[in-house]
Length: 270
Ligand SMILES: Nc1ncnc2c1ncn2[C@@H]1O[C@H](COP(=O)(O)OP(=O)(O)O)[C@@H](O)[C@H]1O
Ligand SMILES: [Mg+2]
Image 1 (cartoon, rainbow, N blue to C red):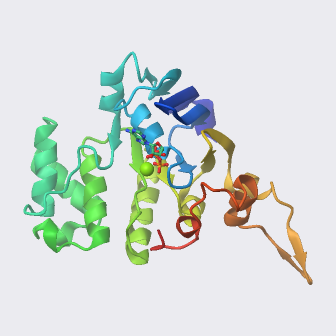
Image 2: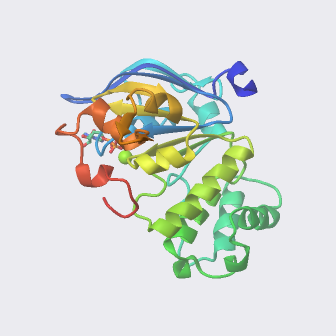
């Protein structure tokens, strides 16, 4: 893998963050290889959004360091911001506008040349060309989320943060968003996504890190994580552990912080 030889697109070292007495991040370390999809998996309240906000310069860590696209988040926040997109941050879909108008608006706000051409390109990339001249209010949940992601990607930032990109979407819409994310990574974008859905991490990620009680308790490929559990022999058929088996074994399925409903594999359960 050539990506392993380049400097990581994201480097996180010993990051801590507390809200008063609540120690949310207790020393988080990981690297994200350039051009890869990295899933940060954790239950509700594990600290995923807190970490994403630190990496996107919206929040300061108490201690530790992080670089994004080679820039230090605390000493070069402007350079970091120019290198990233964060879904939901700049990209608030305006329902009164059409999909195309939303994209043109973002391109203008970013002082890009040919906003109309950029909008058309994005509509095509996100399979929204046919719906481009319809008001966003008429879009399905999946279309709206795709538009939201498209808006955050205007200007082609090399690093993209997707904080729970499919939470609240129905199963069909989730699959549409997954296809979008996969296409983005194929185009060379580095993607850090957070999720509380095991199947989402399983579907999308080159590497999966599990954030639990303030630290990364495991970090590896899906195959590596599955190797943490021995496969069980059931009659004559070898049963491979699922990521769900691995996750529950690691964090303990009686853990008070695990929201069982949210962790169940599947689309709409929250
Ligand atoms: N601004 C804040 N002030 C106090 N507590 C917060 C704040 N933001 C988040 N928290 C708490 O920090 C913990 C982690 O939150 P968050 O990073 O949003 O988790 P996740 O995104 O994994 O669900 C939660 O217990 C949450 O209630
Ligand atoms: Mg969150």
